[in-house]
Length: 567
Ligand code: FES
Ligand code: MG
Image (cartoon, rainbow, N blue to C red):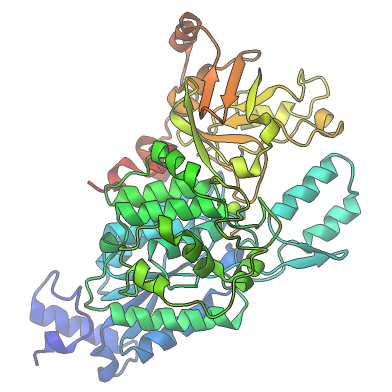
C-alpha cells in the first residue's frame, strides 16, 4: 500500500503540489491534531456546522455534533468538524435572505476545497438548511442533511405557546388593545423556551421536511424535537450513514432531480408549509440547472390536499406532528402522487422506503388522510397577471376565503420606512376593503426582500376589529404568519416591475379562482408612469452588498446569484 492509499485524506491530497512532499506535509500537520495513524488512515467525513452565539436555533449543535461523531467513528471514518457562517433569523440586518447565498458559497467552497470523502450538513434555522443544500448541490460530494429540530412549546395561563405564530397572535391583540403591556411581557418569556427552531410549520420546519422529502435527510428525521433524545440518536445514525456514503457516488445531483423537486413541492403543498420554501426550493433546483415552474405548482396545488393540521394554518405544533407520525405519515398518505423511483441518501428509493410499515398508527387529528383532508387543495397558489407577469404567491390556506375574489383601491406605501411612518397614522385614508400595497421590499431593493409582506392592519382598522385585509408586496412573509397576503410579486418594484407603477387609488383585482392579479389601469397611463420611473436603490460601492446587487435574481429563480446557478 502506498502512503497515498493509506491515508484517509483522499480527495484533497493530490490536487496540487508535489504528491510525495504534499502528502508528507499534510500528514505531518494532521498528526499535530493528535490523531493516531490508524485514525488518519480512515476516510474523512466532514461535519459542516453552523453554531453561533447569535443563532438561538443552533444552541444544541455542540451536543448534536458529538452524536454525529459517534456515528461516523462507528462507521469506520474519521469525523472532522468545521464551521461555516451561521444565519440566526432574528438577528440579521437588513434580512437573513441577503446572506443565504453567502453561506451557500461558504458551504460549497469548503466542501470542495477540503479533503472530504463525505459530509454531514448540520443546520436548522430558516436560511441555514437551504444554504447548505444549495452549496452541497453545487459541490456535489456525498452529503446528508441533519437539522437541529423544532423547539417544544411553552405554557401561558393554561395554553401552549410556540414561536412564532403565537408571537404574532398576541402582538396583534396587543395592538388592538385587547392585551395589556404586562401580559405581553410575560408572553415574551414563554414563546421560545427551548433549544431548536420555531415550534410551528414555519420556514425552518418546512425546509427540514423538504430536505427529507427530497431524500437528503434520514427517514423520519425532520420533526424530532430538538431536545428529544431521539434527536441525538438521529444524529448518531446520520453520522453512521455519512460514513457509509464514502465511495458510494451517491451525490446530491443523483438525489435532487426534477422528480424529487416535484415531490418536495407536493409535500410543501400538503404541509401548507412556508411560502419561503418556494424561494429556497427554486434556488436548490437552480443549482442543478432545474426550475421550479410556478404554473406546474398551480397544477400540483389543484390536486394535492392539505394533510397537516399545524399552526400557522391549523392547531398543532411540531411536537404534535412528531408524535403523530411525522413525515413518515405524510409521505405514506401522498404516496400515490409521488415519484417513487427517486433515490434517497440511504441508497433506497422513496418507494422502497415507503414499503416498510410504520411502527405506530397515525394520529389523524394532526396528519389527516387523503379522504378527510384539512383542505382538498394545496396550501399555496401562484398568481399571474398584469401586476405579476412572472408570478406572485398567496398562501391560501392561511388566508380569508371571503377575500379570494376581491377588487379594491390601492393604499400604497413606497418603502418599509414609508410603511412604518404612516400605517398607524389616524389620518390614513384606508378602509377594510382597500388593498395595502408595499413597494421596494423585493430582492432587488436595498431591503433585500425581508419578511415584511405581512403588513400590519392599520391601527385604526385593528381597533375596529378588522383582522384581515388584502395585502400585496414584493416582500416575503414569515412561515409562521397568516392572512390574505400576496407575496414575492415578480418582477419586483426595485427592478422596475409593474408593482413600481402602482399609485394610491388605483384599482387592483385579485382572483384566486382564476389565479389572477391585475392592475386595472389603462396601458397608456402605465406607459407614462413607466417612462417617469427611477430605480430607487443606488448600487452599493463595494463588498458583498455590491455582489448581491449585481447578481441577485428574482423570487421565481430563488433569489440566487446568477453566477451560482447550475448550467
Ligand atoms: Fe430560527 Fe425561527 S428563528 S427557526
Ligand atoms: Mg421564520
